[in-house]
Image (cartoon, rainbow, N blue to C red; front, side, top):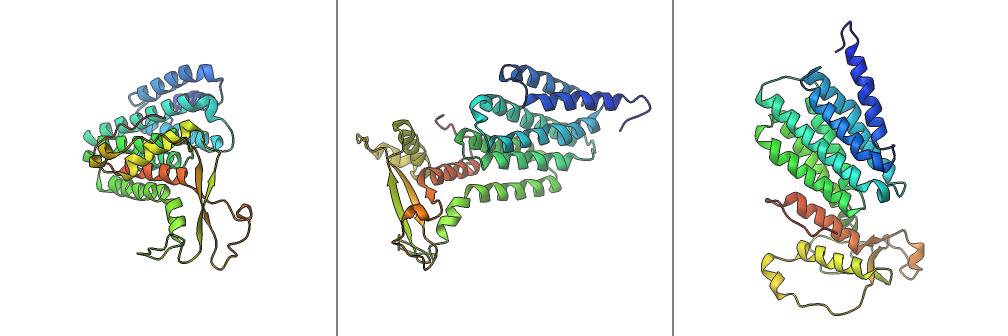
Length: 290
């Protein structure tokens, strides 16, 4: 893409420095760094041009965000950078939407557009798989936004990428459910399990706020709109958490549950179903923020 002037290399080094600084600079400076970065990413679609704009998104912006997500799974990084990451992810989704709409509606053929769409979906699927509810909801909401905005103008190849990505997103949101259901035969009415035994353990390690949040999400996931009016207020102070303990086939069910590999928390399963609920809703939903 560069010519004898070497200006493209200068642009690349400038954007590389900014993207590298976004997730590593002090928290107070992240919003300003993001503002400058995305201002430049939007402007380069005109100068130096759309081909370089797509190249910058696929080789700098989206890999940086993916690294940001994966780094945060091993640390408490979300405690200090959650809002900035959500802002960056939302801006990235909007940038990709703008690029795709501009290229498709103007019949501009750019190498790497399909890769850009695939990388954007991969990033959002990575967000959906995060244990933190706000990040997983962000991934679901951004996928819906990209599809609703660009879907009507997608080419066949773009729709192939989108459908495969949606299939993967649904699979991620149902992963724990699928693991739990391996203990049961189709149509089974035995709640203790057919293949391996399943037990429920209760623990008093759940705060009142967490219990209330779980009830709110469970109502959205499991109840029909017509059933909400029939719910009676729960005045109990039982703030226990529940875990499904999944025993392997032929395992000794009398063994201490602490010796069994970690089970599936009910709250995690409800959260996963809630992500599925967001992905499959035909209309935008307005969920209660945690």
